[in-house]
Image 1 (spheres, rainbow, N blue to C red):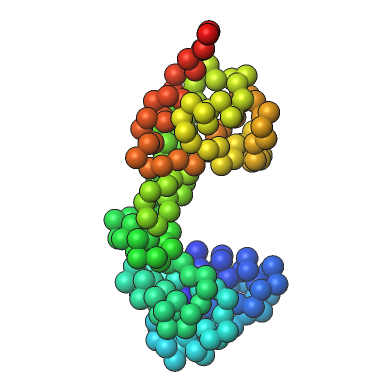
Image 2: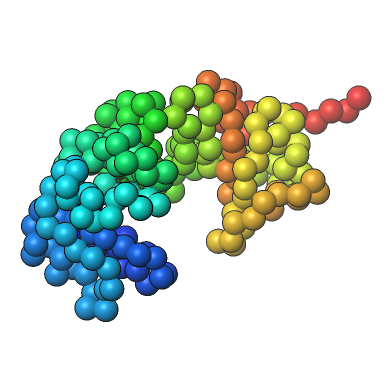
Length: 217
């Protein structure tokens, strides 16, 4: 639902990958954003109207994305898709990050556009602390890129885990992400993405911002 810049790009991407796509927008002119070779279906109407959703094929849909410009419309249509029609994969675009957190806790996966963008920029500007890349709906666990002191270079990533009680979800080296093995050693320029308890984030950041404590025993 929604054929703005995000919705049209999403529709074109899915269509180019061979998926069957239907796009709903209340403004018929919005469909001009779709490429001429777009082979999907376009439906003019309100995205949370059940008849419109049925016309779009919601009853056999595997996924539904609500990416219009209105938070309320996105949340309502996402809930209708999931709760009324049982669509297994549903996501809603939310502009208000505070509301996004609430809907996440209600079990509605959301993308808070402005907050996500700001977090990405902060993560690149400030080489300290951690901005969550993912937080589970309960708010207990986060995955975040964490600044690691250069004093850890040459140490195994398992040592980071033992020191912090976290888990290395993945690391990025020279622009390529990979899963760590038991002998993976931190190299200069590596970016480390940790899975950790949310309430342990500050302690984890503090531990990794300093060189490791050497055990001479």
